[in-house]
Length: 314
Picture 1 (cartoon, helix red, strand yellow):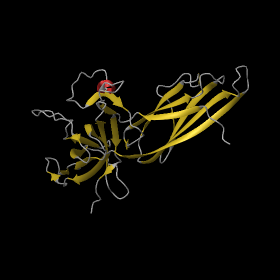
Picture 2 (cartoon, one colour; picture 1 turned 135 degrees about the vertical axis):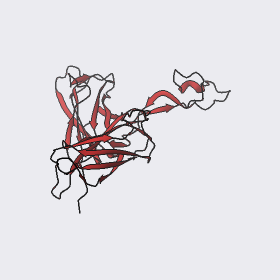
Picture 3 (cartoon, rainbow, N blue to C red; picture 1 turned 180 degrees about the vertical axis):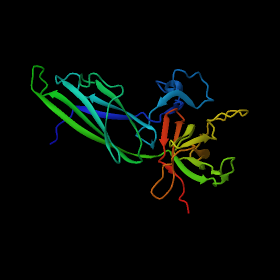
Picture 4 (cartoon, rainbow, N blue to C red; picture 1 turned 120 degrees about the vertical axis):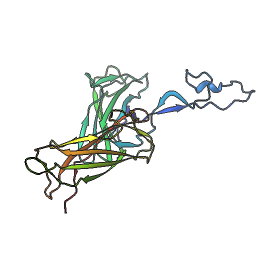
């Protein structure tokens, strides 16, 4: 027979919260002994204005819900002492330890902010609450492994000194999906010789990089910035919304609904007298795209692509 656990664990996701809807209670019949005001469930800032559907209060997702690569996974874990108040048992040395099992690695997580006193005693009805965060960098199945350790007295008698250590473990599984789909195309400008007073020479390599960005999430996002981190032998010029040009108005950041697509472009030029890094099959390594966005509630997201290379020359 398994031991009776007096400390229970609850979890709530803090990622991607949403506004609460203003929903009134149904009207009560007049002959009811205790009529309830339909506005009783509304927040304190409600002043009878029905034109706006949402309240300023936030509600947390009922489960882990959708998690996306490039965003920050955040949750709160609570160890609750569910002993009755009249009991003589004591619960102390309570600790919560967490690790994230990603597809290719297992990472131990620290609470935010870090607790100077990681273990503490809990009176009946009290809770130990901790917040944990993890940057999602891989798509696929993730497992949040939570272990709770505590010590309890062996009986209800207050004079009892015997103690029993307890440990239990819970696993929470979720899937991290891509939030932003990035498709790229690299086109090389043709090489040609330039006549000079001294001798003809070949111009440095130049490439056009086109990127198609598609919102794969189930909610809207706003693209904040896109940059190209080039190899030392190249320099990149941006032609996107986050670049200011003389005589042109600043462009607004793209707002993408689910499955919306936008385009980005860069001009990549080889620096004079520089050695280009090549792959084994003779293709030049240009650099990486770095993209930043925010969700509709302001949560940040960040994505870095793999190394972009040119096409193989025929």
